[in-house]
Image 1: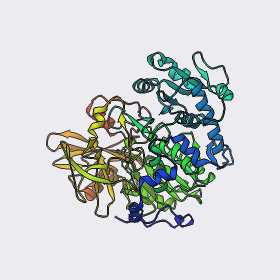
Image 2: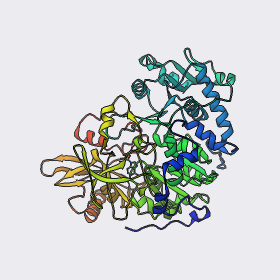
Image 3: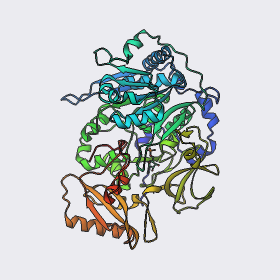
Image 4: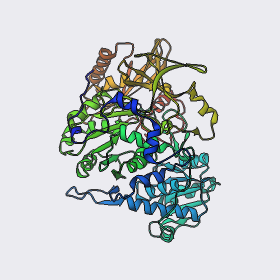
Length: 582
Ligand code: AMP
């Protein structure tokens, strides 16, 4: 496989690092703590943001609306100083309600200023924050608020009436509902946030929290089962900062666009906290995905660092290169993606069409931040997730009981990390046994299968639960999906194993096509031939079904378990994170 050399654009801004081994050797978390002015006994995410932003008059958040006929975007700016003042008012509102560190504030809101103000304000107060996707309906909201013991809710009047009123009496722990009203009087039993904030002081001392005090609660996106609540601590800010530097190459003055919603861990770690630590201006777009609009935002907002998902890249590919080439991305310096395997074609397409390759990186809700990444410090091997960041040690292991053996290069096994980086989750809500099971022998076991090559690059094989066992082979869906996607007619592919009396499981692929392509038998034959040629007959799919769309989570992951359950006529399980009913 080709190795893509570093892009030349990067030369206009010197990357944060260029010497992979050297930087890893020099790195230590203690120095990062000192740089941020935190200790184990005193660490609060909001005060670190404040400390870093002191004296900075730059715009922290730029909320973009819909463009006018000339393609100009209306934008509402909030400077660092405004954000700190507003969020301090919010802290004081919480204090006036007697809310403190025992409280858990759930947030249900589109990406609007109050969301960011509320998150920072609550963190400053030591109150745990749990964001929810604003597109959730009442049921997933009720489940999460019950599981999480929500005591405060921050939402809008519209969401309150539509989604909370029908379930409010099912959440007995809920004491206060803060409402961003649309002009009318706040509903009964709620508090008008703006009215309260207007009376509050804009100065608030941060609560004295330690690095181990809980800060954030994130429910995982649930591609393989019921969502779990992962608890993160204030010390995670140390990982946020370091990974923003090494994984996203953020520089002060960058214009950064993270397309993830804060309802998902990426949108919180890299859509809210990390950019504020690096003095960048974040572009915030609340709308749904739309290829043309996204290209317009990249151009008009002069985005320099862009963090998105493989699904979004594949959808842009589906829309065709002509659309991309109508716009110019002169400031764009670094593109990264996360959440799913990034097919090699997507990396090459991006280099050819956008002028820069996408840098895939890997992490999960539990890790709290980027762990393995393609970075400016080394060349990309398309299809690989990259190499561990400084401070992170990753291994491929086999676990047997309470022992772990580390496997050598080019062997598939479970991806494991040496436990103990500052952003690691500290528990699954109400489930200490499940948490304990993730740790064996000082390793955190991720539940993902991967392999490491002899250059130290990691290659994703699949979620352990998605892996297919066929005729004695262990098959990762990603490899097969990537081969199918090499066909120019294919937009997206998802592969599952279905029971087979002879081989144990046989491989079935679901395929969506690019605009203008027809799902014909001859195309199906071409795909069979291509996959047999690329993978050999034992790995190639035995069945290919054309679909108009694939089930995705709201964070953009293909839900293979849903395809499988449907195929086998089994219950589909928790669907609350499904993007849209099919
Ligand atoms: P979540 O905790 O919901 O964000 O999901 C984390 C899971 O997404 C990981 O355990 C992987 O299975 C998958 N994932 C995240 N990033 C990547 C990547 N770059 N390549 C492949 N899979 C990924």
